[in-house]
Image (cartoon, rainbow, N blue to C red; front, side, top):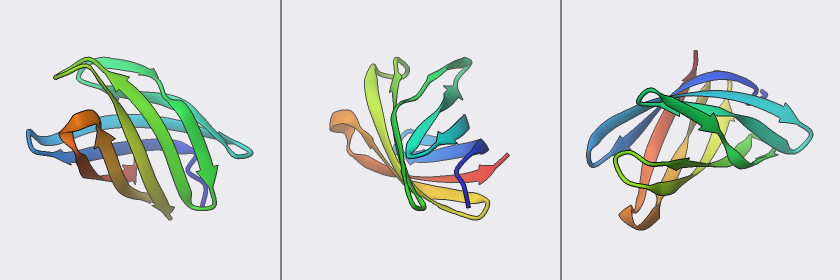
Length: 98
């Protein structure tokens, strides 16, 4: 199933659950879209699709400035994977179509 659509994502971080929204479009192997959290939203960067695997990055400023690097697998209406949060490590995330 395609990653295209609207998603509700929750990153399981040491600071607790970090929810965000994600709106994705797929064009060939390219993944574009917008991710929003804590009242702000911005375009994702470096998005790619390879079968059921999706990758993208998102730069944030809160709670710390960093680039989040997401890698996930789409299975029906779920999108689950891991996000690398700079020097803070890698954390799991879960997602559902919203």
